[in-house]
Image 1: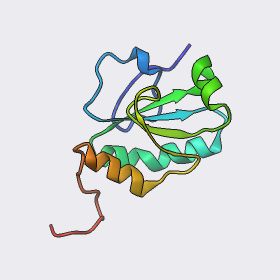
Image 2: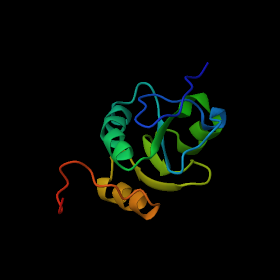
Image 3: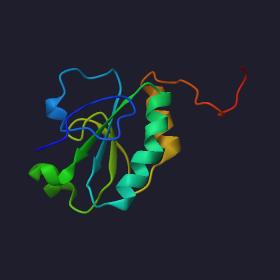
Image 4: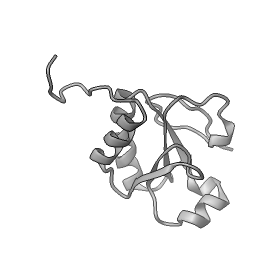
Length: 119
């Protein structure tokens, strides 16, 4: 049984195949339940996703034999889009600059609170 749900700022979400409507921008985090690096990346990416209007979908690699075979212990992995057709942005640790640049290139160039600039 998989947790289901795709939402901006979601702490848990299910398999991508279960989502009926996809937002314009989606980040997918490949994760597993006993992975402290996964927990750290999820906590770090949630505010970035929210600030750029992107949904965060969290996929348990252990619930999908294909993903588990493809990624094994190489988690967490963050994608812009889906694991099968998206762009891998980083793995193990969040690359904030790369994620911001990718989201901005997709049209989610909102400024994060406290990021500076004229207001």
